[in-house]
Length: 601
Ligand code: GLC
Ligand code: MG
Ligand code: CA
Image 1 (tube, rainbow, N blue to C red):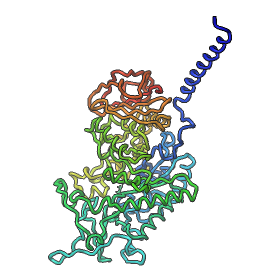
Image 2: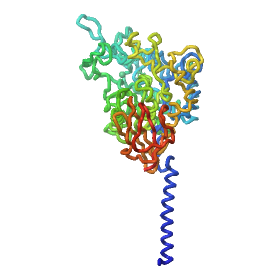
Image 3: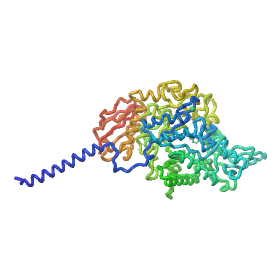
């Protein structure tokens, strides 16, 4: 017979054990999705969604068929509803619009078609109220030939003489003037343009009207910092840094006083005046670029510290190989670069024919090469490339957006991606992109034109998709706007927009904001991406990127356990939120994605 003392002791022990177990379970359930206080706090930009606005095509409020700042301000709530924390505006500065704002003639003022400085200040004020960060486009490589800088440099005004890259002509065997080197512009033709007045050539890596600054001139470096400071003081939270790989060209001082020719690439698919004809060893990815970027970072950090402000972020646009790209984060000597260089791998390394292994390989490459402690990011489209559903397939819209929103790091969305907007058709007669006009003809211009990705945003199914109150638009509205538009997708029970919205909410859950990731090709065509954090629900994206139905087995996937349910699915999927899914056989239609919720492990 046990003594009463023992009974009491055992009862107390049982009670304590039961209490602890029940308490732990309740506690685990209670916190299974929320962000706990003991998790490292993230800086505002580290898990944000950045939405790229192409202002010309976003929303027009004065009926001239051109989007404007007031249009952006009037729709800021839309970003709150979508879960977007940051907007980046393509250039809004004074410009002759040869390259639609990437040819700036006054870096310190707003282009009249977009509004006034007061409109900009109002945009910033409203965005701050709503908690939306605003990033501006910063175009350091070149200025419009209409800029004061250029005019003064042409006139050899003291202080401006070396603001641009000027060169004396070479004289050929017949005594004729020729270009200093065989360098080719991004938009076709020589980088060299003769200037009658100065009797010298100037260099332009892009359009003839976009003269390259001389970054070896201290006054240029200082002016660039001044411009950055001006817009930070106006309220910008940072910048997207344009065209960085083109910042420097080989210095004649290092080449016996001459601009050295580039080797010919042997590429037979381009003509002698097209990019790719030479191998760009003297005009792209020069190592001096990074010193400038590190200098900018130092400036931004110092400004932030001196003004006790929130983080000012710098994001680099750099189409470059993986090692040159990663150097933008910082170098081996612990110098710090930008917050991140854009990850263009989904644009440059994946396409409609890519299978799940290609996806996994390309995604892992970024995560593998990224220096430890940095933040990743994912880009699916922008104003320079064909839109995602057109490059991949329309049935992949939700899967691609899900990858963007569920992968670790910052998600970047180009305007319209949340609706699955496709390239618009722009006839040769309507073509305005300088890249297409320079290199194209009525038969081949679509290979070069960036206009199809820039057609106006589809707000609703009224005339001109609700983009303008006017009769005409600067680029035609894509024909599919009746079918694909924001209002229709808000009204529909299921739509790309609603999937986007629900996944941007999911993004805030602890396992997505702070968890680890696990990525694998389950078969040739289906990939799985798991986000896991101990004691929190696990979420897994399963995505068939192929063109045929595929059946996979989830039972070997780490961190997945039953009971599992569907959290979100492609618009066309037969599965609905809440449907139970077992770890065994799972069939997916072509392009179908499912986001699954599994219990904590
Ligand atoms: C960047 C921009 C592009 C522009 C070029 C020159 O690549 O994204 O639109 O034409 O720089 O500024
Ligand atoms: Mg307008
Ligand atoms: Ca340059």
